[in-house]
Amino acid sequence: MENLDNNQNIEVVQIKKSWSKYLIDYLKDLNFYKSNSNDIETIYKERLSARLFISLLFIIMICIIIYSSLLLRTVNMTVRNPSEKKFKDIYDKYPNTLTCPCSYTSPQYSEFANFQVTVHEVCNSVFISQQWINEIYNANVSFIPSNDVRTVLSSFWQLVRSFCGIINMSLDDAFSEFGSNNLLSLSAQSQQLLETKVKATLDFVINSTIINLKKNLAITRETISINEPISSLATNYFIYISSVKVGVTPPIDIDINATSFPDGCSCENLDGCLRSAVIFESDQRSNFENVSGIMFDCLPLDAALASSFECFYDSWCLSLIRNVSKANMRPEPLHIQSRFEHNTTLKKLLDELMIEQITMTVNFSSYYSICNPKYCTYSYIHRFDKLFIITFTASAFGGISAVLKFIAPFLIKLAYWIYSLKSRNGPRTDFNKNQSTNLSLTIIITNPTQNEYEQLWNMHSDTLYCLCSQAAIPYSNFIQIVPQFHQLCS
Image (cartoon, rainbow, N blue to C red):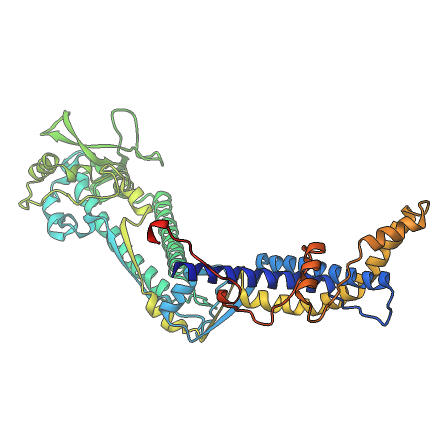
């Protein structure tokens, strides 16, 4: 069985050798430029031209295949009625080239975006309730020093409540304005870009609201400063009876004096007399205790803007205020964590609309359904496109082969001409000899005998080629095996 396999392998190898030899001989004799000439040199030139043509064509086509494989191609694609998921998938891969024209190009923000705003906890605390304001108001405020906490505390919380109301109304107006604005969306946008645009528009509306609030507050303060109204708490001016006259109408003279302080500051000064509010002990104005965060100024508005809620985060300080105010309410201190420091002034809080947090929600599905693109186009750069390589190579093959088939003979003639110039001074016979030496002749002998085959093998074993009439010949036809056994067996 093993011998049979070896024999089959030998036959396969021999067949391959015979076919390769046949192919080599075929290529040697290949001639695309056959003419009626029997001149050996002409035939040789024609064969050289054919070989040059095949070689150049092979090299150029390999180069074209490599070039077309490495060539960067822009592939344009169109998707009809893309779903939201399909849009996101394509955008993740080709964000720079994807374009999906919207059917509706100007949706309102309120149709796909909403917000929740959290303001400073003081605006939702008991401190701005009317009950607390009433309880901390001291009816005998006229007999208490103007910079005592009991004088300014009630007005402070009234102003805080007013500012909280203004801020809530301003935010409502801002969000209404935001929701009524239209987003110009000519093509579908990614969720990230959409959220960025929504946030930018919201920031613009909030900043506009802050600017308007600052402007209105500045106008109010300027108006109060110019008109110099007398505070009902006698913090800037106080009215007193300068003299009493009998039998005269009116019987008294009334004068007005500006509030002044031991350090020489007078409320006649337009800049006011800003200082910390204190708690005086009985009538001893030399004994007092500072209250952290609560400020006094000639005008209650200026005092409130310069104050903070620091005391109302502290249980001890809040207890002190309750005691001196004789308030029955026992409110808990402010405790919710804030992005603002406890000593942040009311003015700085108002500059940011007392906003703690804005939670923005963008419903991309709603936006995409409103946009409703009918198609999407995108492009990408591609290499190694098999169809393109085949098409490009096939289209180039015809033209290149025609050109090479035309110029190959001229190149051979040019080579011969150059060679003849170099060999012009040499013997002509040597040139002919060299040419004939390189000439290859193919001789075909029909039905050769065994003797003829053996003679040809001895003379031309390298080029001899004889096809068998029968490709598979049993070994028994030409091999005889006679075994010799050990003498013991005989």
